[in-house]
Length: 361
Image (tube, one colour):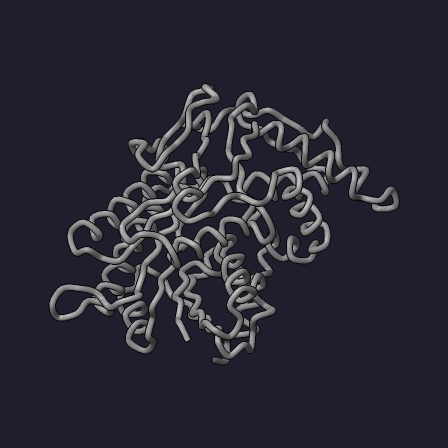
């Protein structure tokens, strides 16, 4: 049985990845989920896995070398999938030091612990042991509105926010371990993810939640900033394929071929909510285009991201299967059907789940 150590597995992308892996491999794998459980880490995302013999949750900070070393010492970890990160640009502008600590120093701790566990006396590494660092397209900076311009793996790194700078730094640290020690690692850089379990500070769940409650829908600047949108389960599949077939030391861009302006995203969400909500649902009366409010632009707001997943398609056979028009419907439907989850997240009550499930362990 192969054992995976997943950092940040209680977060949005991490929890979807864990679900994907168990759906695909079942009892052939074991997953150890390490998460600090900050505001964005929610064990309710994985409640259906409680009691499963090949799933284990460990509450720990990736910056805690002693705690991470203990996990490696007590388990035969063959795969590390490193999601854990501070990830919201607005928060990074206010508290950059938090992002540097988690994203840079935390990644270094993870690399050092894996290296210590996997390195043989001759300086080579155990066969079939791999470290995958999950990163973002934001490390590449910003594109203009040329529809033929894309981020490639060879695009120079040019981050503009403290968040993207911290992720670019962690990418370079991983690369340095590959170049210096021949450490068995890959880096993936993905576009904006969306789907179930996303914390409502991000655009899509924020707009869904605010619209249902008749609250203002804030739009930065003119709303024409462009992002490429990737359905989270497509991303989970890409990560698994890189783990299984990726060439060690390589970087792979993971994009959705779904470029949309922010204002277009908001219009689509409102249209979908109005389509799905029955007239008898009182929330339908709250949903209105009048809620849209343009606000001062974010500092250092990148104009356009567009990522080319040509390499991962050519080398590994991965491609984004979910078109945005389908993925957004799945996403809106999930939030409508999981109103209690959203209430817990927005009230902070989701932290009570950990206390009730793990306080006596």
